[in-house]
Image 1 (cartoon, one colour):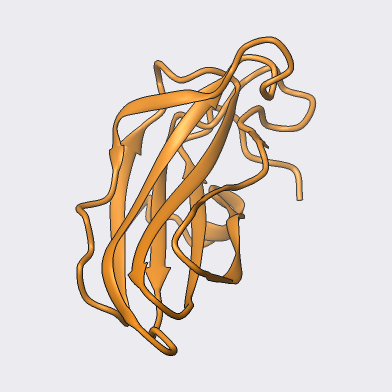
Image 2: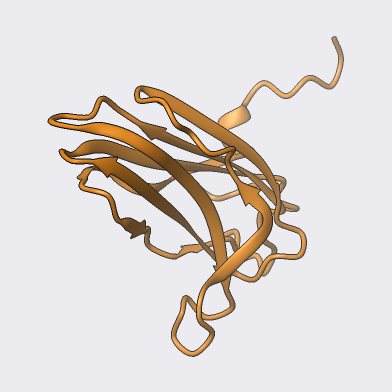
Length: 141
């Protein structure tokens, strides 16, 4: 098994997309994430968006959606917009996770996760994580 990477963590970076939070049926946008590898001028070229919805308290889940958006300047003058083919398959059952593998080669510098929940009463815990990979240079720390 020659040339098998032994340090996956040095080749990827997992970042918080949406902090775990109880949602009442709204859209939640995460913070902007800079895809550039520190000091390199090169960016991560792919990622996996993972989003999860938990058990509804006091109601029932109708739908749960998660997607990625991008912006060239973290939304300062270039508003965030949806990235093509960067949404999970819609979830309609509680206690479920969804994943989507995303090609970021055409994406702008900053990305963020957005989750949208529809519930019939009550609250539901939601979260999202982004596993960045495919950097031309090994990330520092």
